[in-house]
Image 1 (cartoon, one colour):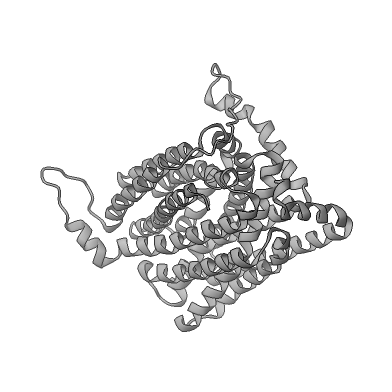
Image 2 (image 1 turned 90 degrees about the horizontal axis):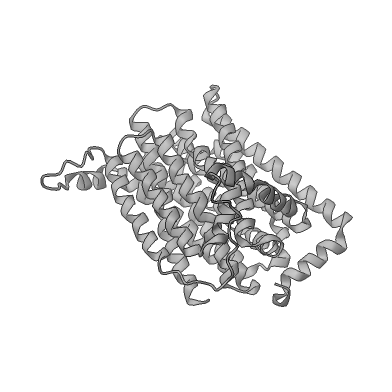
Amino acid sequence: MKRGFYTIMSAQFFSSLADNAIFVVAVELMRSSGAAEWQRAALVPIFAVFYVVLAPLVGAFADALPKGRVMFISNAIKVIGCLMMLFGSHPLLSYSIVGLGAAAYSPAKYGILTELLPASQLVKANGWIEGLTIASILLGIVLGGSLVGHAVSTQLLSFDIPLIDTGIDSPAEAAIAVLIFVYALAAWFNTRIPHTGVEMRPLRANPEHGLVRNMFSLLPDFWHCNARLWRDKLGQISLATTTLFWGAGANLKYIVLAWASLALNYNTTQATALTGVVTIGMAVGAIVASMRMRLDMATRVIPMGIAMGLLVISMNLIGNVWIAVPFLILLGGLGGFLVVPMNALLQHRGHNLMGAGRSIAVQNFNEQACILLLGGFYSACTGLGLSAYAAIGAFGGVVAGCMWIIQRWHHHNLRKYPEEVEHLLAIARSDKHH
């Protein structure tokens, strides 16, 4: 790998570490303030709002500037969201601002891979990026749980700055203050990311028009890119699969917390350890996939998505932690093995069809829209009075059913367009066509 790849990995690790820790801190902040269950569940979809709303803008923005600079600006926005949460804004509002920074960050984070590396290294690079991201999810969740736990929070709250009243009086507030420094470290790594030499694609914006009008002027281009990727025979399958995977995976982050509280009577700090167990499995699955899978084999992993949905339903039958741990590792492992080749295939098709930043923005739009819909579905289930067990069962059923539809869709394409699909897979095998 080129040297710049390791700087990108470092920046991604610390930014993702803080993203996942701040989620746990926000859950604890709302729990300690007596917020309703549906509001805590709403943290997952609220994070996705700006991914959906600003999708037409962030992809073009990522292609218009050096991607290291875009990542730096995005981390600064995340810091603003943390400061809002620290100084009394509603956690849902503050966390949505962190989501705004993440929405701007993602197209640059993934798009720079296709600018820096040849196609032959994309699966391997995605394996390492996803493996490292999953490791940061694991450590971030554990970090967030530890920061709001009694032992660490007591030490943090014992610090005092002479002559200054910081207003930090609770474990959650102390945790937020620590995470601001983690985001700052990620921003420093962003400044060290090298220029790739790829020509920038300037935003087609009129300086005489306002921001909103310029954003609407980007809509036709964005919807054209979205439609083009959905019409592509491999693009539509990989986009549908990754969309549903991330929609389910993001909401599992909260569902496991809720399930552990109900089935095992765990508090937030204890439950985060089980959420971390899922990410261990995902990391293993991602790394195995990066070593064993190729782009032309990517579509073979779709049945694993069906198995994931069925395993989510099976969570309701588990009431023992010794059974839960290997079960959750298996659940995460299937997900990690599924997403790496599908992500690589989607990036490859998107880069060739419309450019890295725009294709990742289209991917983010669809994935975050799915997170929003599935998160809204789960929140609505709990808000309407369903038990957590019933809501989890309904959630898993939806995921398994949708994955089965995607598999049937792919088989239909193989029967109807066999030569076209084989031609696209052949292109994916060869560097010279990249």
